[in-house]
Length: 238
Image (cartoon, rainbow, N blue to C red; front, side, top):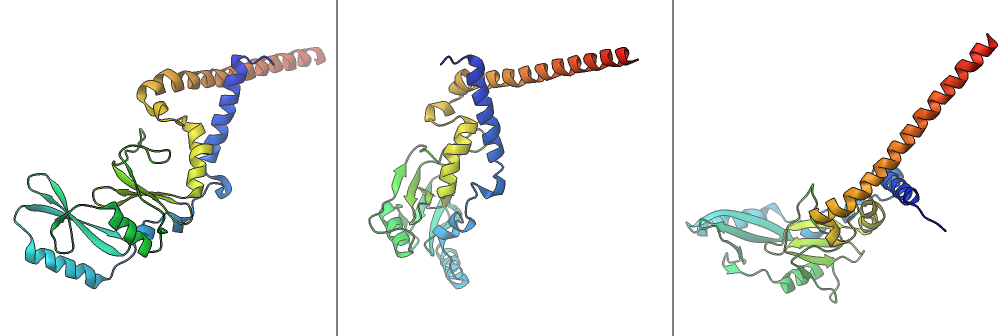
């Protein structure tokens, strides 16, 4: 079977149009379940009195070189990190002493919270994976800790503070491959590089554009022929 450029670009045009329609999520085909992608699944909730207690402790013990305090909830617990006047950040323990963010501690908190099972571990990601990566329209934070909930939802936590960066459920994972992967043409890491976008993706899109323009030209030509034929018939009838 002989395949020409018109067939290739025609298929790409059909795929591009179809996936463009699917990005609007018709009839909820790839709709994520709100409860599965809510950050509260990771953060949990805390009582106001717990927050007041932490604030009082900060006020009483705050050193003069602190510039700001950032709070994060994980599994219903409060975690703090501070920024110092010298520009360096550090994480604090319950006694407001510097401490490192240990993935094992986060794992234990999330297991106690019922989000993960004991065999599951958090993975340290210094760079993008298949689902969590930067785009031209959005920039992702790195490094992160990646985990998986019981229902298969991936979640990504800031590796320095523990803050929730993203949650991607099964529907989001499917749409990444069958909708956005095809529509954005970014299946592989190298395809997200600007050079690849210009050298590979842009020529393909130009070919698709040529198919669209060809269809417009053919349609215009046929409309002209139809008008000419109609005019000839009117003259003959007259």
